[in-house]
Image 1 (cartoon, rainbow, N blue to C red):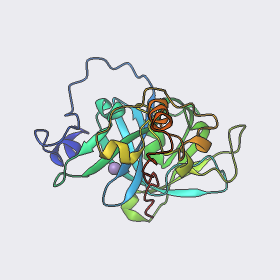
Image 2: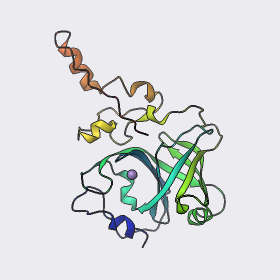
Image 3: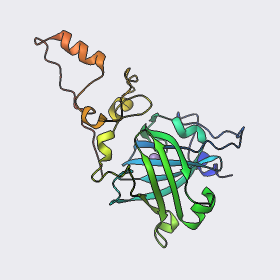
Image 4: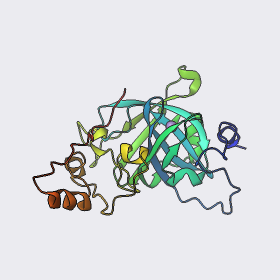
Length: 236
Ligand code: MN
């Protein structure tokens, strides 16, 4: 039962996270997602659907499209597939308390002939992502003899999607709701206009949703809009 650890860590009457369910179908959809999780420490949870569960790694510095950078990815407990579109707030006092943003999602293909479980067992997993933000070929490579086998490195391969200097924090918005981490933490509603990923980095920080901008314009000069800090705390 690969989801026992997931279930054991959580009280489902106290957290909005989904309980594991019996699988109806064994058909793999090759889903992947990344959640930006502002817990005790901000991190990104990288998840790949393999054999009916979401194999999961916590990546403190987040994924990157920069092939020169290798980021630590600590393998954590398998999550149920239902977790794949989870976004919300895990209440204080619960495991992983804090806000969870659905940061990216899409599908992936394994690279090479070996199955996913086999690639994980050998400590070298290669795959091609088709996300909204993450695209192209990646590898997760286990650091043998470190972290009791839980420490891996997430590496972008050189391909047409590789982008030197790519900064994950320039894309700190939800692909589900368009919200920032702070907006999720405050339980604000989803933004009406979906953000476009291309060029989104330029707009993330200084433009509110159209409705807010219109209200601001209507308020005119006499009521200077309060400068709401949109800066996200980016803890290492
Ligand atoms: Mn997490």
